[in-house]
Length: 247
Image 1 (cartoon, rainbow, N blue to C red):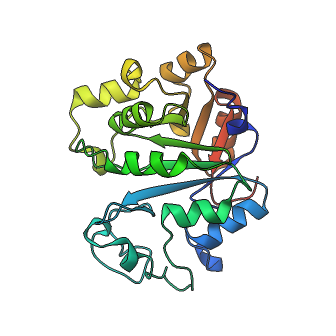
Image 2 (cartoon, one colour):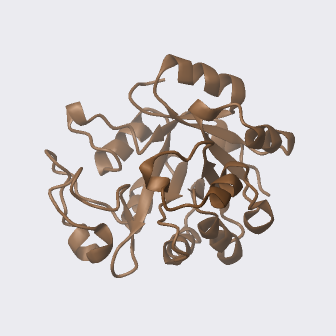
Image 3 (cartoon, rainbow, N blue to C red):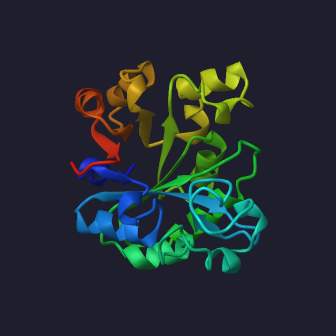
């Protein structure tokens, strides 16, 4: 494993440094530029377009944040690249757009979104694109299948796992109790060999993060929004993924 100290040197702006009240929407070009200007690392999400391109966006559907509608996965990247974020002139970026924009100016953490279907095309596309990228960058996901695919396709790219303890939100309803147990305790280690952990700040401390620290792996706390979160992140993690304020 290479030197991953860059992962914890700066606070990480969650989905970029966004503030909708100021017209800066999460995962938008403006949010990325604001994070870079603030001296932070940048965390973004990627989803898979119909034609197999990786698009910088969090939700499976377009309706919450953009002037578009419907499922992102049903639309080709060229069409998605014309989709404007609500009340802004920003358009959705592809992962190639993002990499060209950042160009090594700040560390990048890219979360691979997944519906836990076993489809790893998004992970493979991201790994392929990052193979030629020169700046500090890492891929991470809640889904161990994604991280296992990254490990196999591009073992030199830093890879991490995102996890929590409860998995109580409705988005996790389709996961079995056994799968949730495996995820919260990071029992996929033999398959993923993750190199860092991003764990829900409200669930810290957790046995998994104690073990990660014992193994010398960096631990990030997400998503830090309140003073109590900051204190927990400082005590139990090596760095925070934050939003809603400037550290």
